[in-house]
Image 1 (cartoon, rainbow, N blue to C red):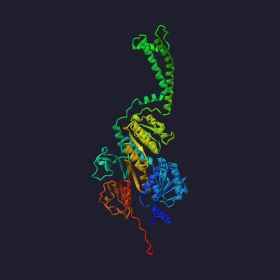
Image 2 (cartoon, rainbow, N blue to C red):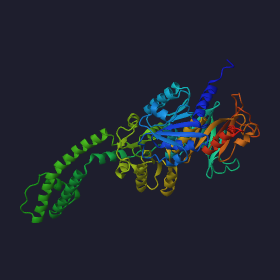
Image 3 (cartoon, rainbow, N blue to C red):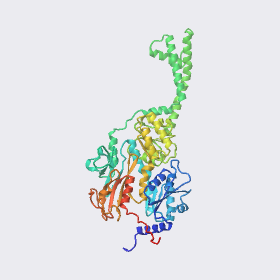
Image 4 (cartoon, helix red, strand yellow):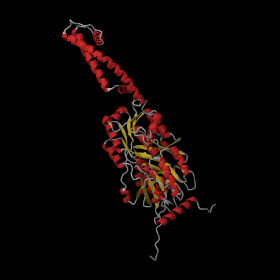
Length: 588
């Protein structure tokens, strides 16, 4: 048994033979998708280094938010189009012998079918599959020997929830028996802090530059510490105030504008004619004036031939208006009851509209955000232009009011009580609709907290600065680093959102002959790039959380770091031996 080659060695030798046959020694990665994530992931892999050969498969028609692949083609990325992700498409893409395949289509069933087709073409490659349904994802993971199932919605949702509440995203992970979570420095004890993540001036700062610390990575006894900290901070704001907004909204929904104007006009005429009649007939006192006017209006007054012409005219007008007023009041009551009942059945009347979150878009990410907000006890009013949106059923189950309308229209925002909400979270997949809804909301409430989803990270930053939007985030930018790391077989433990970017918590193994082999641990630690939080010795399961940076690393040691994307790439390069240079034939 000791002489039998391992599966890993067999796999690598097979892949190596296929690469030699194709005349390219670079590892081949294939990415399939149709929305913004496919482009961002391809860009992330293209930036990973020269040792990667990348192929992207997209349908002929991609989502409008996907940029042109021209810049990636110029960098050597092969882009092909296929109607279906079947065996033929994968063979055309050269999947045989590939190192990894990422299936990031927005449909779970399409990704599952593509994974089964890919296995028929190349049974020995790493699969990274995007799944919204986590239960299905666990089952899919068991079908394949080397498979990572990831949800971009699950990764991005905590960041949007935290931004909406003005809190820290409830990020936590377990490693080597310890639970680590992200918190504000003021919410945790000093002896629980493992690492400073961000200050007001920088991310992953030097140990001596931690003044004004905002976010820290802390150690806690349980996995729910992040949620507990968030709940405590929410509790400080007090119970959500209740008001008569629900009753007022019911009255507005039950009244017809035209019928209301007719009733008000008739009442005004009645009051004017009654006042004039009381004045001309010398009726003294407010109550006697009302008494005479009402009796005249309902036809109980006698003919008075001895009165002046003006008094008789007032009496006549009062009687006619009284004849019109009674049917109008009856019609208003009946119409109000019917309209209110219809509004209640269509979920347009909500019991409370104060200190709530207005959530626009119930797609994959919006549904996750909806569930997390309701889990925290926050009132939510949802808006989506499609009655059959993915999260519509979840909203109904959770008792969350859903307004089926265009969120870019100002009247829709008013219907969601934007005037009294706590924050607006806009998560639809249409950047134009998202920005328009945010600007309309800001016009109504200049001080409103707005959390906006946009594709392009640079555009998101400029929108945030130009329009004073609190937070502008790109889901694909938050999640692409984790997908890329999974394809590159890097063990990413967690993704921590900081501002519009993501920090990766990863375990990197030191390989023999690499730059880190025989180097002190401190060489892997670089402020503002990659910070070491733990290490384990080769062959040992024990993790040293207070390792001395002077300790010498050896092949097989594992270093746990919190790093930026570029910092993690650099660390992997340090932990990997350089590629052997090709030997030239002396006769040539």
